Image 1: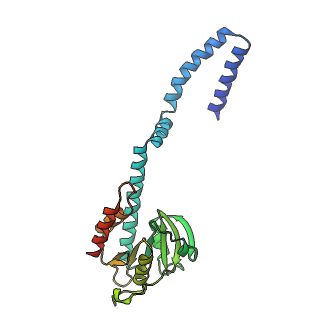
Image 2: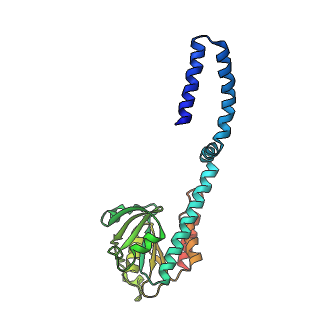
Image 3: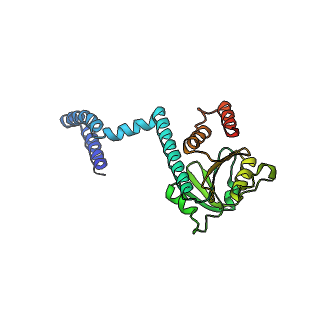
Length: 233
C-alpha cells in the first residue's frame, strides 16, 4: 500500500508540474521517473520472474508434470501402505466418463487428496470405509460410493470378494481405472474395461497410472491399446 500511495503521489506531483507550468520541477520528475522505471524492475525482480514463468507454456507443462508425478507417488505409496497393513480399499479414478451419478448417491467430499485422508477413510473404524472412493483428477470427489457388481460370474474367481466384483462392475460400464486392495491378502489389483490384473507391484502400478492419465498431447489410441494388452497379460 505504501508503494501504491507513493506512486499516486508521484503522478500527482508530475501532473501538477505540467498543469502549473513548472519546467524545473517537471524536468526533475521526468528524471526521477526514468530512474524509477529501472528501480521497479530491480525491486520486483522475483515477482516479475514468477509472472513470466506463469506465462511460459513450457514452465506450465513442467509444473503440471511435476505435480502429476507427485500425486502418482503419494497415491502409490498410500495404496501399498494400506496393502501392507491389510486395509481393504476400493478406489475409482474417473477418466473421460463421468462418475457424478455414483458420487451424488455417496458422501460428497470434494477434498484435496492427501494420503492421511485416504487412509483415514478406509480405516475400519470409520463410517466411510464401506464403499468406494471416487477421484476426479487429484480431488477426492466422494466416499462410501456404492458401485454396480459384475453380472457375468464366469469372469469372477472364487477368491474375489465384493470389492473386486464392484471394481469389475464399474470398469465394465465406464472407462475409469479401479484400484482394489484386498483386506484378506493385502494384494493390489487394477481393473479396467472389465479386465482385472491381480498382485500388481508398485513399479508397474505407477507405470499403468502414468500411461492412462498422461496429458492428451502425450497419449493416444496406441498408448491405450498398449495398456489394454498389458492388463490382459
